[in-house]
Amino acid sequence: MTGRARRFLPGLASVTFRALSPDAILSLCQVTGLAAIEWGGDLHVPHGDEAAARRVARMSGDAGVRIVSYGSYYRLGCPDSVAGGFPPVLASALALGAPAIRVWAGRRMPDGREDPALPVAADDFLRVCEAAAAHGVAISTEWHRGTLNDGPEAHRALFGRLPTGLGRSHWQPDPGLSREANAAILSGIGARLLHLHVFHWAPDGRRLFLREGRPDWARYLAAASGTGTGPGPDPLAADAGLAHANVADPWSAALLEFVPGDDPAVLAGEAETLRAFAEIGDSRPEAPPAP
Image (cartoon, rainbow, N blue to C red):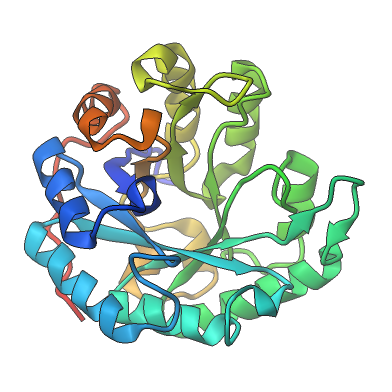
């Protein structure tokens, strides 16, 4: 580790505004100063639609908004979760020029059963990581309740079968946990952390404005800033021999998601709050060329 604190590009998860077109979302990013985006694989860049992915890649480059992730709905160990399995997901990510693909870690059933069993999900995790790494793309699991990546023990078990350097994790807070518990979990992810999904919810699921969660997010970003080196050579990626620049030199992003009322009109205020945190980068990197 170089000792440099990780900083995060301010960005947006496109699924925040599923009702809007990609060009409308990019316009919002421009006017609110959001420099990064995770494009969703359900509507904006559908799995397997490479033409749509190339079109959105060109639009993003023209808008100066960096694509940092392809938000897929592929579930590890559940190949039927996406028509055609993982290959169309990877094809779309490559056409989009995304340096990382977000996947879901199976399901945890209400009665505690795992769907699929953890070893099956972990084996698939390794398989898709290796397939993506051959093209210089990282795989990052969604940190989410009701999945096999929903707590420290589950996280360690899921990643335990991967060689050092393969596999990343997104992170988002669990509204049912305390600030201290969430921060401890985030710190425990360590250098495997890739991107943050940023929102503020009440314990009962009500969506609140990010400014109401300033103490929480100040703590979370402080924890996250110490988990890696920020833009620059990544020891985990280097150990794995992943030579592609997008993997060895990832840009982490803090991606706004779940704004109150799904209202585009509140995005400017949410973005302003996000950018006010010291750990959020204030420069917009040059967008990579469209594929």
